[in-house]
Image 1 (cartoon, rainbow, N blue to C red):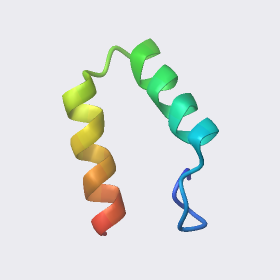
Image 2: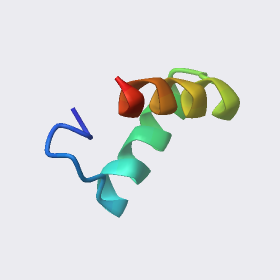
Image 3: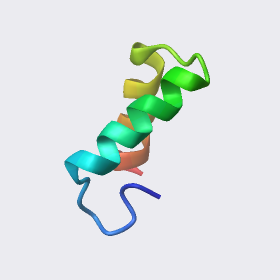
Length: 40
């Protein structure tokens, strides 16, 4: 959803980092998921 318009705004990236933290997702895992989503 964050990359739906092709641009990730700073506020959107910050929100996703906070949500990942609340879900206890490691930074490395969320980063690799972000890269997979961007390249898809």
